[in-house]
Image 1 (cartoon, rainbow, N blue to C red):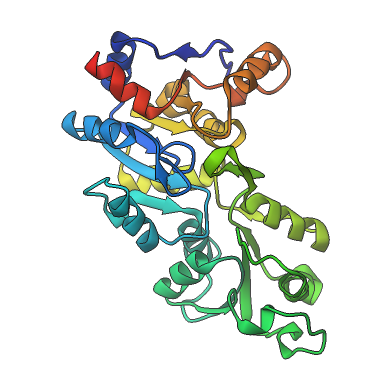
Image 2: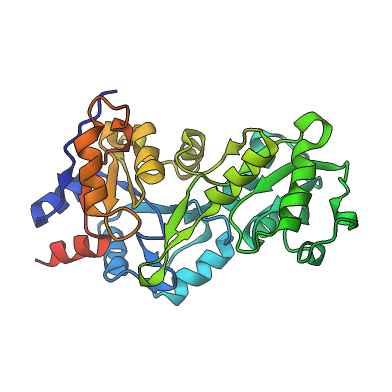
Length: 318
């Protein structure tokens, strides 16, 4: 499919109304789109309410695997966005659990090794799996003689995602599983994001830095269950019964969010909207537009762009 390299800037009420009429379903990234850290992006709640008022459907699709769906429910409520339900939430800790159960067909009750935060552990346990690793106290300090470095032969999969507790013991123990039995235990990676936008203008390392570190160290590939995986998108569209041609992806990262919408042919090839409130800035977009044609990067170019979803809400009031 040929991609246009001239995304439409949404700057008028008429342009916004075109978006509202053109799409029935909206997929939102979270970090950089709805919030930055623990701070709601101004006007984000108003835009979500605008979609509710226009009988639109939506879901939240985040590559952050640290927080479970239950944790995200509490965060939406805390930030003042009401009526968000668990079935609207697709963090990659949940998609990893779906991969283990539905694609890898690993029996419920099996053991799964985790390098990551509590979100992965919570989603796998809720699905009925036994989790190892994660926040085990033996991983907090270096001890090469520790029993946790001995591979449990009953472990059926390895899930790696974002964690702020990345240390040598966690690396070493996970490596034993990645190498075990000629690298035969399935390796699930929750995302490929290098960074994410934090508060105060900070750019912070994301889960992809952990996943790719382990992939490099073990010299093996992983199953990517986060954006821009088309398998992940297909699962969401089927689960939510969203019409692909009437669905728009809204995100702040070109190589995950925008590629997710473009590769998935959302909106019949016009289903990606970039916001500049997170990791991608206007100069990044312009540099891409200037170089995209014929470079093989057309799949990173959004169909539309705008400062933020809060700006969209302001346009409707103008």
